[in-house]
Image (cartoon, rainbow, N blue to C red; front, side, top):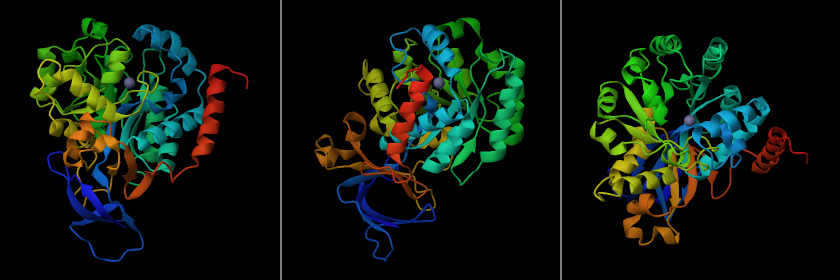
Length: 412
Ligand SMILES: [Zn+2]
């Protein structure tokens, strides 16, 4: 496949250049000013800007089924009173259709890869494998209710069945949070991570009461950050905590919409960046955000962090968080358009008022409202000009709506 005529932003620190890209077997094999070779598939992408694919480093994708169900509630009311009772009505089919809907939403927002933590994760893996997106999936691990062993067994089965599938689906370990996992359970998970070289992702200090009840050093002493920890939220951390994070192999997923919407506050992103902690963006689940668009998260975070000093959060830094840091956080190779790398690309439509003046197109990615034209993973389009070439989207809408009615107990 050859893509011709587009502006290419090779990486977060470069400037867009008009270049052609040749893709073979899912990889970028050539980038040049004018590739004159013949190919069966040639795409003329004039008036398009291609960037490295965007990454969503934290989601619970199947929670699209709960979008709009629990609004204007405190975190405790939202999770423990509203969402958890409804979660008991989920099954593998509902999670499958709810996942596909979320994958459509993410692909239409330019997301090529995501990290998930939830239940019925086998259905998430099945949906992601069919849809064509890249994913790091984890079974949410909780042991405070005595069911820790069976959840861990589900996670081990996922590894057995999916880890490395088609160079796209990977499995990690997902201890839910310090308040839902005992320290012995965290130690067991940490050992598994080290022995099998799997990433761990965990919600960490999302709420103010976690900071009051738990000690970060004690949590890290379980070994969970010895291999690779993708820590989610990290809102309530002081300077000592941040220093401690920077001394471990920790990557942070910053989810500003969810943190604001659930009244949990604003993460100290600028301090994290000063400590050289690699920060990326996550959407969190669609029941607490409620959209799956990392470009929105990037813009929101940028504006929040500029409020006292506009020199903060420069374009290159934010683009790095959206692309390069996202790949690092998921332990995937990518985040730049380069020969030998996977063809994971986000294509923007420059023929859009929000992209003018086109001379400043790179800045519009963060500060305007860019429109995604296509999304490609390993050389295959998962979204192209309003359509989803790998699935039957009408069937997803229908099955999703039926599933929603089942969960909420709505007749017809
Ligand atoms: Zn979450």
